[in-house]
Image (cartoon, rainbow, N blue to C red; front, side, top):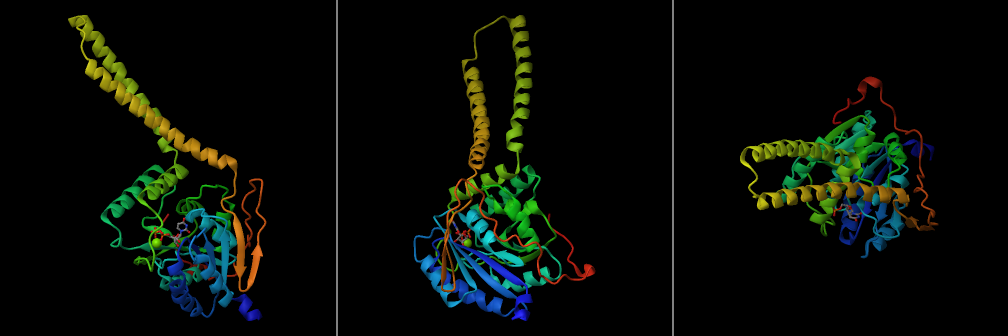
Length: 355
Ligand code: UDP
Ligand code: MG
């Protein structure tokens, strides 16, 4: 059907990790919304990120019922960032929308996002207007994090904007060109830039199951973001060192003057030991920060793929995949050069905001 083929294709990219209870509600709520947009076609790229429950079987069943559902089964749990990367690589849409499986990102927002896209926005980012569902500790930590990240990094993150967004094919292609293995997606999304429009939404509670991220994982995720996008933590030690050296020099002058004036009464064991311990602590922190970066250089230098695909399922077809060996980059399969979105007249294009 040529008319059908000319309609722009929207790809939803959905990572699933042990989400067996979330599978059915996700399709039940999302598919009617997508079907209601009659001028568009859609595909739903589901990534099974090494689930150990019934998730994969349920996804395969969903795909068998509806060939617009495409299942990418990874060989193990690679983490959400890798799962998203896999989905974005596999998606062939003119616009790609990463969305969580647990319905915390309301799919009702998709028509508004698509509208902005058809009017010329290249990125439509969804910003949560409240964090009422989060604990006070999580809210405070998130606020501090955005502040710290944006102070330290040249790449500014949009506050309270997560992975839920629409990206034009051009933006997706740009993302696919970024070679890093440690993929802090929010940072990469911000790094590529493009004309961004914000739509606001209220984040809902999880449809089922529990969050996959512990406090410790979130802390490591935060470190990943800062070390991935800023070298300030590495460089600040020069300045701290210089400050301490100047202080030590001045203090040495005071000690010499005192000795000359008042002789040398031996005193100060406690002050000596506290200065030593203080400086030892500072040095260890400095070495630790260097270690954080060296660890990341180590991982990057191995050049391992970000993820491995085990099988692909679409409709009743199943495709097994030869693993890419030799640390070759993950296949960036679908570098279509242009989107088939109808370009609006220049004056109707949305103006940029955000970055
Ligand atoms: N997820 C994943 N791999 C992981 C952890 C999470 O694919 O290792 C998926 C998860 O299934 C969900 C999305 O990432 O679709 C967001 O996870 P979650 O809801 O646990 O995070 P939160 O909303 O609590 O930040
Ligand atoms: Mg969630």
